[in-house]
Structures are given as C-alpha cells and as structure tokens.
Amino acid sequence: MSDPATELITFHGWGFSPEIWSEWEQRLAGSVAVQHGNRGYFGEPNIPSFTGNSARNVVMTHSFGLHWCPKSLLKEADTLVVLSGFLSFHPSDPGGERRSRLIVRQMMSHFVEKPLEVLNQFYQNVYSPEESPDNTPGPMDHDRLLADLERLNSSQLNPKQFADVNEVIIIHGSGDQIVSNERARDLYSLLLSKARYFEVKEGGHAVGFCRIGECIRFLNPIFHNEPEVSRDEP
Image 1 (cartoon, one colour):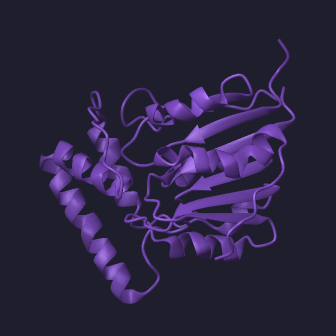
Image 2 (cartoon, helix red, strand yellow):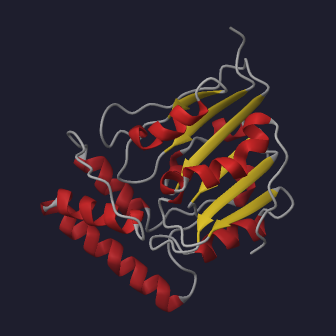
C-alpha cells in the first residue's frame, strides 16, 4: 500500500487526552496518516515525529495544545491547523484579564482538593452550548495538570515561531466560552499573509469535536486536494 499523501500530528488541549481525536481518526482513515501527541495528563507523554514519507505534513492543535507543540515540529509542518487556539490565554482588556486570572486561580485552588469536580465543570464549559459527553478519565497526573493550569497565566507565544509554516488555518466557534473568538481574530490579524480564518456560528470551545463535519469541510483542500471553501473574514 502506498504512503498517504498527508501526515497529521495532533496536540490536545488542557484536561484532555488523545482519545478526543478518535472521530477525526475514523473519518480520515485510509487517506491521512494520523499520529497523536500526548501531554501525559492521562497516560504516558508522547511526542510523535513526521516520517518524511508524505507530500504534506500537517500539525493540528486544540486550545492549549498549541503551547506544548514543539517548535521543532512546526518547522517541519507545511500546514498548521489551530482549533480554538490562542497566543495568550487571558483577554487583552484590563477588566477581562483580571476576571480571567481570578477564574484560573480559583480553578487551581479547587483543583488541589477536588480535581474531578474542576475537570467536570471544565468539560461542561468546553462543550457548551452542546452537552458534555460522559467523561471518566483514568488515573491522572495531578501535578502535570496543575502545573499547566498555572502555565496558562503566563504562556505567551510569539507569532514568529510560525515563520516556517507555509499556511495557518484557524477554526474557532463564535460561542466559545473558554477562549473568546477575539483571541482567534487577533491571531489571524498577526498571521494575515499566511492565514485563513473560519468561524463556526454558535460553536463552542469543542467546535473541533462537536462540529467535525464542518471542520473537515474547511480542511478538505489540504487533506484531499479538493476546492477551497470560502473563508469567513473576521
């Protein structure tokens, strides 16, 4: 069997595991070679590598996944797909930033004693306005989850680190309760010369997993060399 034309490596967001990509893998089976990074919240940490046997290398990140994806891997990527992503987590306006930082501090404080409560509430917010699926994670790395929650307060990506990527495709939900679509539009404006932006009406932070059909339609040009979908300008 010949090698697929496209290789895809995924990086999940905070509080999740590679299992969140299972439907993507099913839908792309046979046409795209898929590997998953694992931050190690549930299970062993893992950073895959491109094999070099395909014509196109694609990295796809969800939310905080953009922040733990290695820069070295981005240098090998032809396309970066950013689902519900951000350069910095907190809003840029002072009032919004204060509220956001307070929420993260409260999550951290509560997580120390009741991590499952924090995760379950987080999942509800991630999937809103859709209903959160039953999620019963296995044994967790409590320290890693808490450390990355703290990292959200200070993590700031420089758009220059995407300099070697030929194109960046940004997909965001208009109803995202975790990361405002303004953060995605900020990213788009900084990468204007190489970026395309798609906004899914009423989509939440889990738009990449609740509205997979729409996302794949946006991405078919890179996965299957089909005609491009018109983009939504911010």
